[in-house]
Image (cartoon, rainbow, N blue to C red; front, side, top):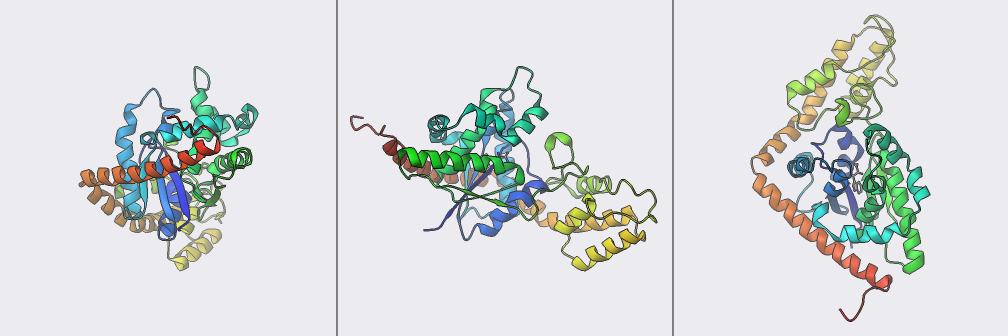
Length: 333
Ligand code: TRP
């Protein structure tokens, strides 16, 4: 039997290059080798968007379009809508007994997100405890491997702890998952910030039209210490070169640009122009496939429905084992 992958995204908007580098690329690469489930995590998206539930439905489709556009094969990969698998909520409740308040409070990613979110009425319990629900996401599908960006490592660690406790207490039912990081741990935003983030407006989306890509690239942050194109510049930590490394397949060109940049014989404009060309070559087939699927959204919804059906069947099977192990599989029912 094939080993399984589970990973997912919150449907709060279309996906961007950061998602691609962090996780999508690995999913595409591994889809033939692993039985792959991808969760469109609308329940998790609600934990900080509960006041705007209307934004989710449209973005479920947008995220599915991105999956298909980058080359996830719907014959192999199951796209699963989280809210349509209520067994996830059930497992989350049981897992809550296995996690302490102190552990949740230490989760560095959640801490960081709470700082950014500015919850006016205090931190909702749903948001604060979403790592528990994410552990249910991963384990209900018995995934061994979770392709994710670096910021998700604390979630995988939390899931591993829960699995160890569960299996020790109730018997070995669940699988301890391993994270798998992308080609780059973290793609910086176009503003040079730590990561691409919708709210910071520093993203290049997979479906962006060429003009939008050009505008973002031409306004990218570069080496802040360099004033004239004839000054020797820094390549390390310069997001334009980081992107070249990841998205420009012409290694010779990248090496030459780096060398000239260090010597002060190439300007930012040319380096960006070449990056735009490379990015556009990368994004064009993705954009085209995305548009094709967008015209056939009925078919995309069928793909999502089918994936969700398969995902739910698997989740129900795991829950049967979980209830059995927890001695709540009552026979009088
Ligand atoms: N927390 C992930 C993110 O913000 C999304 C997610 C939800 C996820 N459930 C998951 C990722 C399970 C991996 C596995 O991107």
